[in-house]
Image (cartoon, helix red, strand yellow):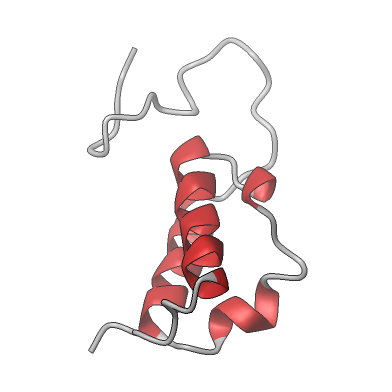
Length: 78
């Protein structure tokens, strides 16, 4: 099985039909949260960790939500 650079199995290495997913879009959203302090609040009511195709992306999303909930937000990358 081929793996990607982040050590997750490639979602394309399977005999199962691939659900509609855009890994690039998931990465773009996670990056936007890190770059812009308003993105998380704008989309967090719509997007949940279970919406991500890559499990690690869902974990990262949940981490963003947890950080916001304990007051560790608003630290966009500079």
